[in-house]
Figure (cartoon, rainbow, N blue to C red):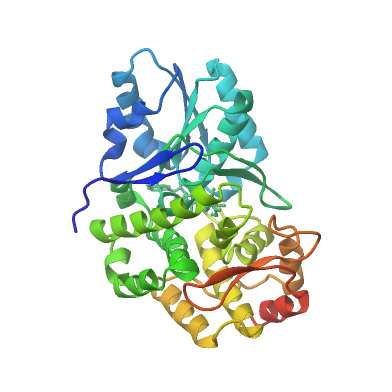
Length: 369
Ligand code: NAD
Ligand code: GLY
């Protein structure tokens, strides 16, 4: 299979396209197609910006000399997805004099995408956002579907808005500079799609492990496109997570609790990043499903084996108590009326939302590590 550009359509009230392919950040036509006005704010982080921001800026300026382009950079890492840095993006939009036809371009991973998207959702009650994801995780998940947010010390993504992008442009060429650990983190979210609704994709991921870990262009493009097709199908039917979209959170209630309890990952600390936390969370969800009699323990083992083959963690990191994790899980956005509502499964490819999960059963699983 070649790695030529392809696109996935996301339907619904505000349809848009996800463009996937090498070199797309240099495609002036694609980059400017979604721009309606004169103001563009480029949001990025201090790892991605030195690699790619100037090129994007020059491409835009050459194609549209009249554009006023501002930029807002945040330090790399989850610890930057804060109200403070959100405020900085808002200040940058104000300094630019951005009007309602402005566009925020989110150039980076999920941290930049979520924060920039939230700034776009809030500035003048909503301006356009184009996602330019630069991590595998952002290409397969966070850039699509319009969830935007920042973290607060009490929990992940607790402040945010639904604000779909006008376009997603995933330049797969930039994955060449992505650290191996971040590639693996993205693969955790790719595995998630197999777990929730696509057993054949799960098998494909078992077979293609070596190619994907080696960064093979064609295998990565296939994984990204398949993941985006799954996400597009779900979010166009349920953009505001009234129902099936919750399935995309398999492993996330556990994972977010781990991230919150650790105080969020950043370059230079050993805390789990989002994808790693989701990997552990999916195993915990599978174990809980087995403990509740919903699924076979053999499925947990298949998942654990696959995640380990991708070099991902599958057990709760040392130093986190089950009680603390449970406390963080109680603040999850899926919960209703103070009851734990979790995404569990009936086996590979068969996830479902389970309301009112018994906390004692959750604690047992958390104690088992
Ligand atoms: P990230 O944005 O922190 O990026 C990971 C690291 O890779 C950072 O240090 C970044 O600077 C670096 N990086 C990014 N692109 C690079 C490149 N091409 N070359 C070299 N380095 C590069 O993390 P992430 O894993 O992309 O995203 C995680 C975030 O996404 C979390 O905050 C999570 O909550 C969020 N998320 C949101 C959704 C959603 O639907 N909105 C879905 C999944 C995850
Ligand atoms: N990543 C979960 C969602 O977009 O709903």
